[in-house]
Each structure stands twice: as C-alpha cells, then as structure tokens.
Length: 80
Image (cartoon, rainbow, N blue to C red; front, top):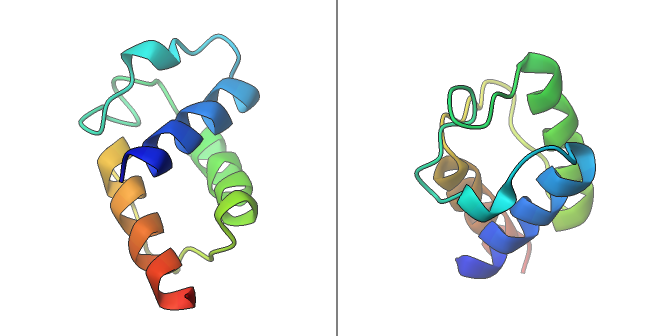
C-alpha cells in the first residue's frame, strides 16, 4: 500500500535525517541501500509499532522496505 510506504519514508526521515527518502522504493534493501544497522532497524521497528499500532513478531527479519510494508499492511488488516 502506497500510504504505508510514504509513512515509512517519513519515519526514516525523522529518525535518520541524512537519508535521501526520495530514492526509497519498495525494493530498497534496508542494509545495503539504506545503510541501516541492527540498532537502526530496532529503532525503526519501535517507531513503526507506535505509528501503525502493530507489534512485530519475534524472528521477523525484513530485507526490503517492501517486506516492512507488506508486514505492516497485513498486521493492520488483522486489527480492523
């Protein structure tokens, strides 16, 4: 869902101001394209859980922005 992608871009921009969010797509790799490390991923997960009112399951290891979007969209659909 495009809205989820735009919200994730905003979260990334707020938590990592040097990130060029205009270049982020669903195919962007969290590690190699965005340069996120394990701490950045954990912080992103925390703010995403608050923003989207969801909880990430233990063991969820997204590789791309699209993986995050899909997970969030499915988790939000379960809470409706």
